[in-house]
Length: 188
Image (cartoon, rainbow, N blue to C red; front, side, top):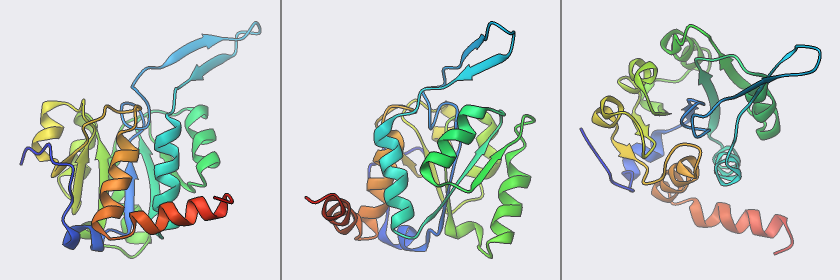
């Protein structure tokens, strides 16, 4: 089903207990900055959107587990996961995301219908075709957009995850309360 809708049904949203995220092209704009130090050590940097980070925090504060499943190993991803308090950070250079997602879902005692996945490209399809809420960033591949039941208007790494968090929490009737709690915690 191709969708460019910015809404998620309340029925589907109420079931979601776990949101799994791809990184490159979803949490980032897909660009990878490679370099080396004077000593020849490899350096990899990625650009993460601060609005996406706040969206992830609001999901977590609403009691939704957030996990990263990516097909690249990167110190930058580990650092961003730590910064956001994401303990389920799985980096597999073979991009075999389905076994990781399956194991995670079983370990957490969940079903596929209680999970969402936000993806952008072919390695995400095996998971997207199984979850209860398959979601795509605005610039996802045609194949991913074809299976997504929710698609962001924004591109990956440019606020798409914040848009997803707002849509999911709005459908659950929790967005306003999460925003209010966020503002109250900061002295309004």
